[in-house]
Length: 256
Image (cartoon, rainbow, N blue to C red; front, side, top):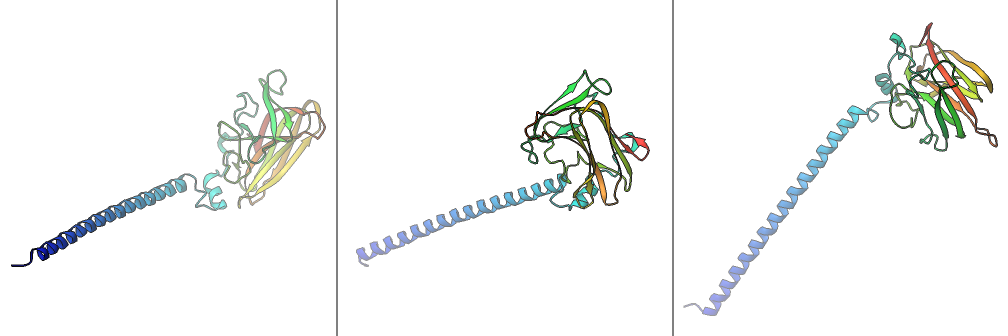
């Protein structure tokens, strides 16, 4: 008969080894579950990135298009065709289609007060009255009505500000003003996405309604134009005030 002590030791050793195997199996199961969780997490992140990239590229396009490609895709060839021109240039619809950059990233120090004047205008029922508090403030014509300010009007992706024009078109921009000195700009967007000043005119202080006119032939490398009104406050001088009315743009011989 085998020694009972030896038999007990063998049995104890066997069962201990079996327990170790069970623990090893548990560890392996835990490791496999952890790996599975990691694979699922990485897959979700990857699919989310693919979906986000697709949406970003599909909606914004700036991540995949160069400036010339973006301009060609998102800015119309001729904003002014089919009588689709400056809207609310007489401010009969309030301040619709006119936006300031006051307080934005480009001009954070600029502040102004703007309101409609129903008592003094070039044509009824309103003029736009602007008073500068901190130099300078700017107002722009925009194609779409939206809340807030125009953050970066000169960027090539500012497709609400830039108005497509035909190559080498004759463009004349006009407005009427009354009050302190106003500067009227015709801005241009080149095919490469760069800004160019096509022309500007400053009117002296005027006690009666006075017309400002900019007339230019659009250079071949300019894709779009923008309308800007700027009022500056001279250091140590009172805040200037100006009334603006009847802003129009003529492309060729057709007034818009």
